[in-house]
Amino acid sequence: MKRKNKIFRKVIIVLAVLALLTGCAGQEPEAEDTRTPTDDNLIVVGVSQEGSESVWRTANTRSVKETLTKENGYFLIFKNARQKQENQIKAIRSFIQQDVDYIVLAPVTETGWDTVLKEAKDADIPVIIVDRMIDVSDDSLYTAWVGSNFKMEGQKACEWLNAYAEAKGMKEVNIAHIQGTIGASAQIGRTEGLEEAAKEYGWNIVAQQTGEFTQAKGQEVMESMLKQHDNINVVYCENDNEAFGAIDAIEAAGKTVGPDGDILVMSFDTTNAGLTDTLSGKIICDTECNPLHGPRVEEIIKKLEDGKDVDKKAYVEEEMFAYDDTVKSVKVDDKDYDVTKITQEILDKRAY
Ligand code: AHR
Image 1 (cartoon, rainbow, N blue to C red):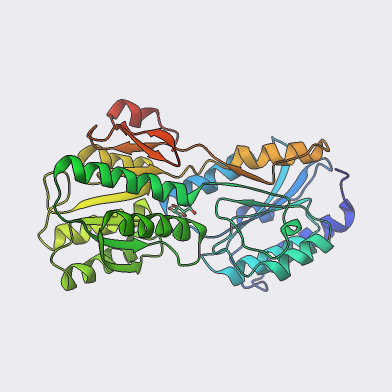
Image 2 (image 1 turned 120 degrees about the vertical axis):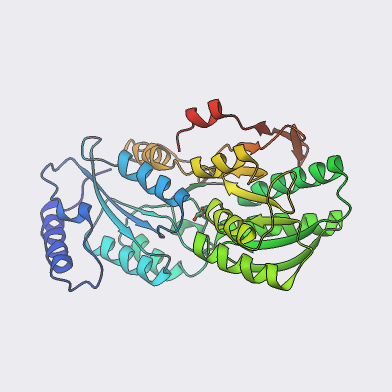
C-alpha cells in the first residue's frame, strides 16, 4: 500500500504530541506518541485499546506493542480508552487526522461504531477489528476482524459443567453469574452460552450481574450475591479477574471453593494467574480466550501491504483446562474439544 502524505502526517503527529504534552487533548500522553517517524518506510498504525481492566488485557496490549515495533517496521500510536467508547471514538478521529496507514480497534462494546468508521472509510484508512466484534450496518466499514468465538467458549464451558455435575452426582446446580462488560462480545457470547445451557439442563441462575471484567467489581458483586442467596454452588465468572474477586469474597464469607468445597468457580481467559488457581482447584475449569493478537494483526497488515486478500473474519483456536480429568472432552456442534488437566509443567510453558 502506498505511503500517504508523509510530510503532512509528520507535522500532524508532532502537533498532536505537543497538544498531548501540554494537556490540551485531555488524555495522558503515552510513550509511543512521543516518538517521531524518522524512517519514511515505517507503517503508521493507530491502535485503540479498549482498556486495561484485566490481566488478559495486559497480555493483549503487550502482544500488540511487542509486535508493532519500529524494528519490525511500524510506528505505533497506542491509545488506552479506559473502557469508555467515547475515548475510542476520540482516538479513532485523532488517527484519521494524523492520516495513519491503518487503524486497529479493540472495541469495548459491539454497537455505536457506524459513524466514526464511516469517517475512517471516507479517509481511505483500513480498519482492523481485534478481539471483540462490532455490530455495524455495513460490513465494508472494517477490513478484517480477528478474535475469539465467545459463544463457543461459553458452550464449551457449559458442556464441561454438565458432564462434571453428572459425574459428581450434583442434585442441583445453582449458579451465580458474574457477567463481563454489558454489550461486549465476550459478555454476549458467554452469557448466551450459559443461558441456553441453563434452559436445556435445568440449572438455576440464581443471580446475574455485571462484574465489568474487573477483580474489584467481581468481588463486590459476589459479596452481595452471597448475602442474598445461600444455595449458590457454582459461580460462572466471565473472566479470570472476576473469578479472583469472587474467590476472595467467597473465602471472606467463610465458605470454601474447589472440588471438595462449597462452591465451584468457573472462569474464562486461562491467564497464568487464572491457571495457577486452576492448579489448586480454586478455579475448577478455565476456558481459554487467547490474547496474543499482535502477530495476527501484523499478518493482516502484511497481506494488505502486499495487495493480498485477507479473511473478513478469523476465529482463533482455543483450549480448555480443568483442575482434574473428571471430564476429558466436551462436544459442541458435533465437534469434540479436549479438556486438559492442568499441571505445573503445562503452566510453565504457557506464553501468557
Ligand atoms: O474481550 C476479551 C475479554 O476482555 C477477556 O475475557 C477479558 O479478560 C477482557 O477484559
